[in-house]
Image (cartoon, rainbow over all chains, first blue to last red; front, top):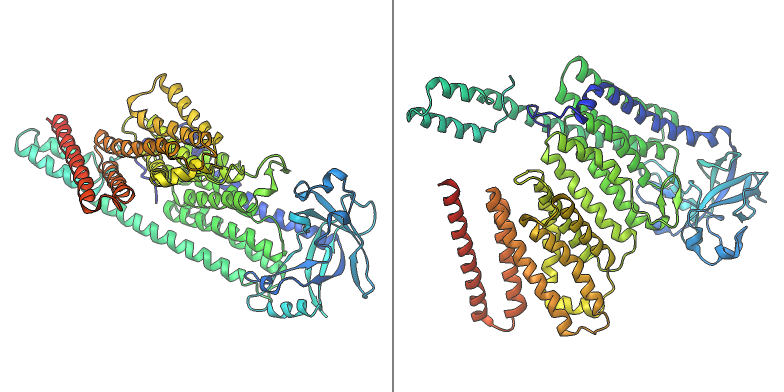
Length: 189
Length: 449
């Protein structure tokens, strides 16, 4: 898989690369690490600065609960009918297709269950105050908030599966002031 | 002066010839030795073979170690907290690349350093998924493949190995396929999603272009052979991205024909034409075979709901490429360009007969044209083999001609002519191939007379 070294070498493009090889490799290796650090930093913001809330996890089709070794999570605010979404224009209300990819906000209010929070409404308008989660409209009224997967150690997912079926599973979310949410963990009551 | 590269087979031939020339007093003993010394010797060839074997083994070992590391951390140990896992991921990537630098610039162990850098790039990709796992990120996952490819590209350009090009091509192919086939509704991405633009993975040509340039400048046909199918794959995916109809047959054929035209844009005998011709022939040949059946054409002209614009556009692109580079249509472009124009004409014919309810006369013309194209394509491949003195295109042409003959037997004589019909068909094919063989023999005799 190595190229023969004795071939005629073009000094333009290849010469330019060869002259800077060490620098390019060094910068690329650093960029690889920076990309990972960036991912970590972005995801750590809500965990470090955010408020921790508990929200109830909705049961989903048990056959689809596990793909590999992660739990698929759904929330009571993961779907909404078009008429239930505040701030939609009449034009937007006509088609789900037009809504795909648009930002959506879910203000959270304390629930009657102690320590738990619930969605107050779903709106296209960013709330000016209070705790809220920012998400994105997907196909046919479903919404994604980046908190729909929970990875578990291989072979340990059955406990969560049963807890979801018994409606005893809550998600511990860290929510930043800008509405970014991250999963801290799952809690079985 | 560095010795010229040569294969063991070529060296054996050269030494035999030198012995003969020396015996016949064409050259002196000293001259024979001087010529032999210009090329790599037996020891160097053996060393090269050993190095290649060791490198292949090391590359396979690196891949397995990378997979093992991925699975080991991917097990998601409950006993390890989040920050320990992250430190392990970053540490492993950093240390692997550091080892690569040390081997390359301190110990000058180039092949080993490239294997280690390859391993580092595998760890980097694994790291993207493991960070996502640690933070339970549920995001648009093909983005991970894109970032992985971006991180691999500079390594592929700076190092001498094709391993990283292969990794880059695999990542881009999977990424483009996922974006278009599974997330086509999301809209094109360019610093945000654009609803009006279908998701066509448009950054792929930009990411592939440096590798293609590298392959040409490095005189590496094998590397180009990695990128050509990637470009074909991306072009075919555009049909699905743009929702251009239910039948992509003509478009796929157009892509293949365009690749044949690009192959012939290379200088005569250029080895860089081979990957374009190989994949182009597969695509066009694969499309022409089913289209050569009358029944399929009857169905297509009756209920046409496929593409018209894109195959026509690709046909025009092929024509423009030929005319812009040659100002006229050179003989060697006749069949490739003819195929590209045929692929543009067929959907027009089908669209023109839409609603005819499978009219016999409407289906006859495309069937005849496709059959003529199949036979012409087969003979063109044989001609390429003759022109470049290569057995593979010639053999492929013969095989394609035989395929055409068998298909026509099944199609026309299976229920009609019986054994006598088959006998006639195979006799005609045998006679035609005998004629081609005689022609090649004659050409060879003229060339080497």
